[in-house]
Length: 332
Ligand SMILES: [Zn+2]
Image (cartoon, rainbow, N blue to C red; front, side, top):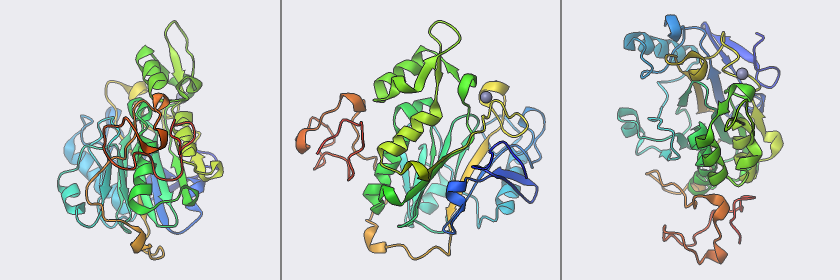
């Protein structure tokens, strides 16, 4: 099936549900993943058709039906774990001890990480980038929701550090895919976003271009998040970026900005395969609660000289796990 993702994100279909898959992730057998769109569900009107968002104003029973249909079409063993997304930077770690609690009462978080095989995770979006990160060696998995607030707060970079701390993840073993998202001239923003980017990101100004009017800017969410992956030292060739713009591709995707005030939600869904090789359990440290790593905001102003720091976290050593992210201000 041809789709808006080109060769890098070929389109597929299962049980009437259309999706894109990243070439960077689909080449191996250890991970299953999908970026769903709006095709293949029962919702009508501005929510048509495969709306997966319960909080989008759609009929609840219809959305539940869409979810059931979608999860079955993708062959998931059960519904994916979806956090309560709040445009923040909290990272939820799911393990055998807390997965039931997560399902019963999802925590507020915009990233979820796990090393459990056969456990599907998902993030819902309608313009914001959804990012899937796969640690092929451990193995481990993360799904991340990175709108402008999360991007400015380095939610993706924090997610990588959480994986390094919790699983011993090595960036050179990771592959990532950034799904369909609003891009280019479709994403014009105001001073609030510019200020957040410049204050929060060392390269904030680099991912902003002049917009169509005074105090208007084009914010490149793709590049800002790609930089966070590269700062964590993922290889550039391991990072796939979907060329499709959700705002432009109305037949394929929901877009909060295009369809406001009412639209649906698409999903990024991923799961470590049950048949993946046995994880190095000894390398997985016990961690049953979400513990965001120590990251000083804003990164650009930080200097942590040799571990004697001004950081309030009181953890020692107060510095990120190896390696030192480029451009973050950290130094050994
Ligand atoms: Zn567009």
